Length: 78
Image 1 (spheres, helix red, strand yellow):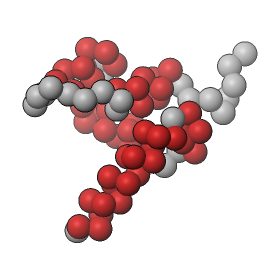
Image 2 (cartoon, one colour):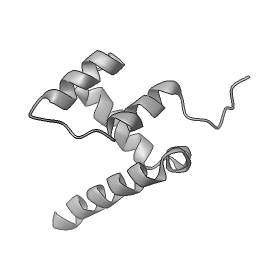
Image 3 (cartoon, helix red, strand yellow):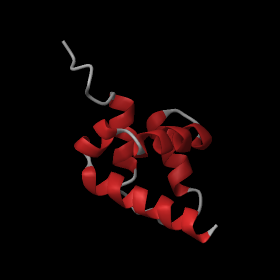
Image 4 (cartoon, helix red, strand yellow):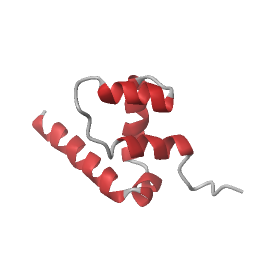
């Protein structure tokens, strides 16, 4: 039986996409549609929720902490 505290496969896939660098405009959005089968808007909604999820932090602390720093820097500029 799956651990209810574990991230879903989709959540892990969302975090995995954040490991890549993208060659040009639209490449990431195409990858989101092709690999995850969701719209880019939905992807960013899920990603923003994952940034605050302690399970995501435990699964991939480097990525989540980087995303938190980026988000915090954007907020500070506002």
